[in-house]
Amino acid sequence: MWTCPNCGREFKRAQQNHYCGKAPETVEAYIAAQPEDIQPILDLGSSLIRGDRGTVYVLTIVGQIEGHQLLPPTSKSTKYEHVLPLLATIEGSGDIDGLLILLNNGGGDVEAGLAIAEMIASLSKPTVSLVLGGSHSIGVPLAVSTDYSFIVPTGTMMIHPVRMTGLIIGVAQTFDYFQKIQDRIAGFITEHSSISEQRLLKLMLETGELTKDVGSVLVGKQAVEEGIINEVGGIRDAFEKLRELIQEKEE
Image (cartoon, rainbow, N blue to C red; front, side, top):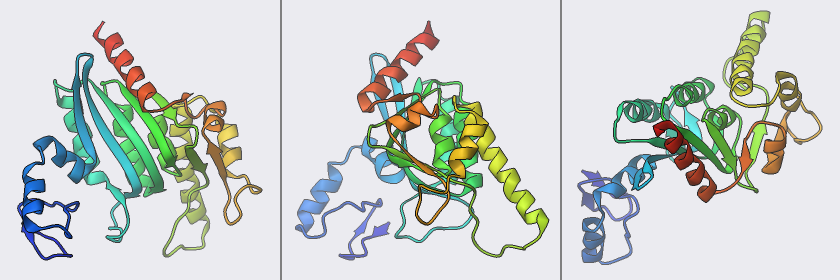
């Protein structure tokens, strides 16, 4: 059971989009009208689209990538403990032909982000990513982990060095550890895109673009010109490319 914090009513499932200001019978009618296909969207931001040219699983990665520490309940987050088994299910399912990933995230936990990116990159199913709004920091490896990537004209990607919060011991080993983390991220990006490691590091360490930080912001076409993203496009282009990849695999 789930209790709405606003009106105090109880529901069998978490219906956080129910209308508290409407009459109870309207709320019940709304909930009863929700098909089972809507529940994955409410729970995980995912959906399954069946068509003549294959079955596509659509997965959204939004907000912060949540790692081993819980984020505040007011923050949008993508939990790796949800995404990893979901990706394993997609790989093992004979009913799913391809995966479309919609990205609008602000970075997050490095370990969790790289784990998701590695899972996506190792899938045998055709995969396509689409950057909407932004895919920053650890979101860059997520964007390039697919077979083909798109970014909308107004989409942004922020590239910067590794950050760390909390207790930091000021010894040489700490900085060596930072460097290893950064090398892992840079290595993954360069392996799954066309940008060179030298150019990527230059963008990471740019000092004249961000007012309070080190790094670069690439907008739409810039990300394509730098070799990080394959093409500028939208949801139509992403679906068409994924169906093309599915057809090529079938043939």
